[in-house]
Length: 448
Image 1 (cartoon, rainbow, N blue to C red):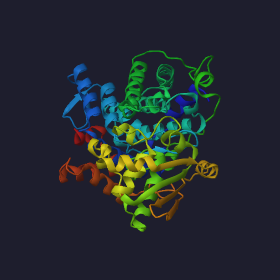
Image 2: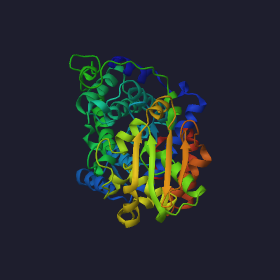
Image 3: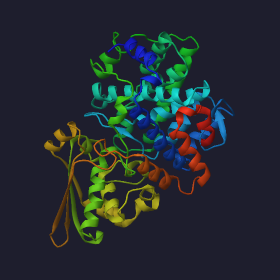
Image 4: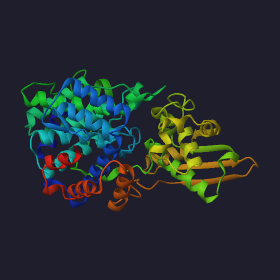
């Protein structure tokens, strides 16, 4: 893998290279992300980002979604990515040893497109590039076990997508990717130990750095042109040697949509425990234990492998704790935004039940995960000694069981209820469905 190869892929990929299925899938990702962003406008951490942007800039060329304000493309990428990412309801790409969120690229690519007056068709080409690069890096060059966070991939993929929308040539794109990938490598400590709110903002920081790198290249800054292959470069220091197979936009079809507000690896387990609780009409007050057998990544990240997941005091800890998510889902028969309100997290019923949740890795389930499933085996034992079991291969929203437009519109409506009027809702949905017929600025005007 060379830096030039990546830059050349960016240059040669255009809207006409995308299949109709890929275009449709990308537009569904836009709708999913925009709905999440609308719901996240009121969250405290996204408000912090907004206040910070306004402290630095009073105006600019790019829309700050939900704020009736504007800023530079750099700060807009930061702000708008914080909205699409913070609630942890975004899409995910399921690689064997890495799980990034390709929708983290949207804010950067849209900001670049709005800044340079690009069309919706051009936006889709930039998104296809970013999704493909993000996924291929995750699959072929995972960095989690080396101590780096997955947004280390995001800054590269977002810089590539932004470069496309800013109209950079091959040399400039190579410079942008080189600057982004050399200067912005995030540490995994973000998601280990006692997790805090930076977890939900780290990708916004990557998006900002990506657009800034592309803007530097646009204005003539040279970057390390051998980012990946050079001495002390990315492959030698961060990832090890790897290669990629870049096909315009095809990896979007391997990206899952979250059904529940929960960390990616929890989706099957949460769906399973809710189905089991409904099937057996389980009384939460009579539960003696909940046992989850899962795959290695889930045990590592949200089951206790990277820190205590039984001490849950805030939202960032709750959505990365399998004990909390399973307990809350069993009690409430749901796992949505309400289950992450501070008073819900602190309530005695869920705090007691989460402590009887046991999470263990099963090697067979790990192998099945590596072969494309997201398996979970759940046993719930009641106080009288009866044990009920449910087994899951995947969940609604997994690439094996994707969510189409109807399901995504239902998700959009549920998460944006009370945040937007019906007329605005219809305009947003219709514009995204026909994105090729609009300019990027037409979309962002609806998100102001």
